[in-house]
Amino acid sequence: MVSDEIPTLDVVRDKLVGLINGTMNREQVASWAWQWIAERDDEVTDLRLHDHLDTLSGADSKVDPETYLYDQSDFEDWLRDLPTEQ
Image 1: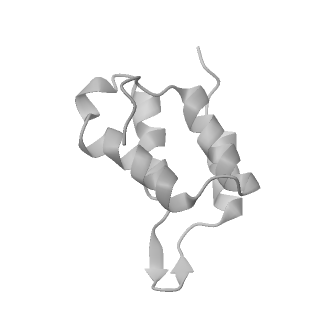
Image 2: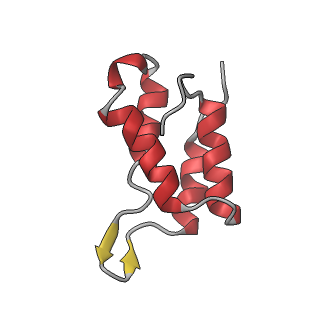
């Protein structure tokens, strides 16, 4: 379920940190981000945020039934690419 509050880059950062340290499930994080991309896209007006939500929505992508496309090193790269809030 999507919160009524539009996410921020800091919220995306928290989700990425959770993926990296294992406190967040990739399927839940991807589903959360996907809802903002697919269902409430018009509410996300910050293009930087939109791009990072789009990337995060693919965190659970698989190349086959047993293998994820992205791993912890990818999540770390995504975190490094995330701009600080302005």
